[in-house]
Length: 533
Ligand code: NOJ
Image (spheres, rainbow, N blue to C red):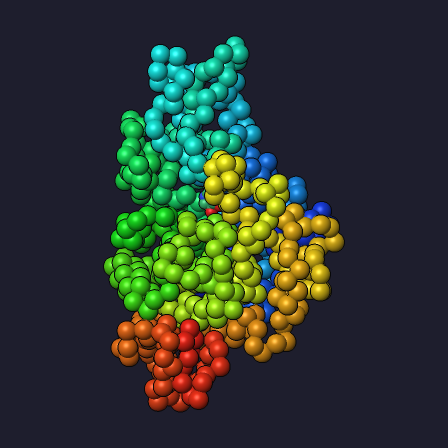
């Protein structure tokens, strides 16, 4: 193996497959492994280096699979373990690596361990694997502390004991069907080490770690002030867990990789988990909440690169994922605050042409930055958020737990359009589990494939040219406050015009790629270019 092969994860383009919505191979309206196998050609042609599959394990799907019932099998709606093996092998034949999601913070309440814990009762070793506590108040009918669930409401639910009486409460930082594991338990630690080996032995090349900052809790379970996550986020003991995982990853020839999902307010805290004997990388989520200004983008890139350089880790750029409003829609909203994923602002007018124009420029930016880039399925097609899903079809627990105040994340999870002029757009033969809009006809992969001006062509070209950028660092170029520009040696210049006034391009040898046509040789508003020379 050459050095560059061993270091593939430092500069990879990684495509996120949200399995339920990628492609349906058996006609039941839900995406599955055979659907992915049939579409590997699309992914190879797109030019990605690896796939990240959101959870594919048996699950009641109370949270789209982030409620795992069995960590060593495949959800029957998605396929079988044998089929996962075929998919991994076929991806490898095409030179595409495979990452899977591991969900170590919580499981499904249908997981055997949680059922055992309910049956075994208070004080049992089975309950030690979770966070069971008596309630507060004279009758124990108040939650043990004031922690909020990230999906709304309290983070505690009370159980009914075997004798039929109201009993202890269990902790769930997410939905009530997702009990949190107690990582002080040796059983939990050894279980997940074994789960990692199970999948690494089956050829998986790495894992994306769900809620990677949240596993360890302050055992005193103290009340917190609103917004303070200290007792259950980024606790020091996490580092030991990931050091032991890294040893397992490194014990395989060529190594396996560990990618953390850590929404921490301070990037230097994330970087502390990326030291050479801990995680390989962690997502930079800051673009998801960044207003469309040159200054803010520059600040994020500078801060991210600096904090990562200190620990020798690559940055990992993200514009969209299955938890946030698709960026065509975010960028199509006017005003300073409309870019936040948390501030979903359903019903706020969206200028899709503007959003698409900016999304094209943003794609060229992330593809040109040093480090890893993550693509969320459908962004290569320029899909937008579906905001008018009928409420009765919404499945995200966020919608129900907030009594509809937050529409939830279904709007970015609508099944992909592959071909044809009407739904289901080649997604499969059945009715898709969420309805696709008729207006996606122009956005199907088939409709875009041969169009030189399509989003798909832009991504394909960008991904083809990108490896040429190598590992070179970035040097900022100062044109004007509304211009984001940098150079990467040798001979590569990136420029994005966030302002209204077209910018005369500097001298260059070749225009490699532009996100929109130039105007008399000048770079118009919301447009990016890649220049050689
Ligand atoms: C983060 C995942 O990306 C999200 O989809 C999920 O709901 C939560 N973690 C809980 O597992």
